[in-house]
Image 1 (cartoon, helix red, strand yellow):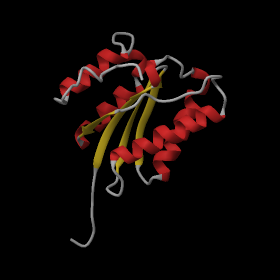
Image 2 (cartoon, rainbow, N blue to C red):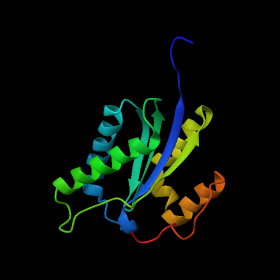
Image 3 (spheres, helix red, strand yellow):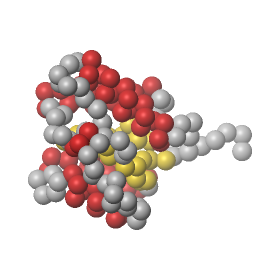
Length: 152
């Protein structure tokens, strides 16, 4: 083949350090725009993003030139610097170590986008920990309970 073609959709989930509920409605849209910029700067396609006060969901069409871990390092690193530059918190802001990355087939993209955009509705019934455990079980991920939801 003369070129490389990829279509890999990844649903990312990552949390505020110690899962503190501190992403405020007043600036969450600005945070989303900033993260979208990071994803686009890395030449990926952001399909959906939304957040709750303690975590973020995003669906990314990942190109083959960068690993998903490297992208998340950029997203979390640059967005925490942005949040800290805005001085929303006296003590500083950081994301919890680690993240979830779940593959999403092209056929399921519309339902995953809908799920991400309707986070507020989903979290009326389930907390972040319960939701995350559901993903881990659904994707048959190995779970190390010593590291899951520990304080950083």
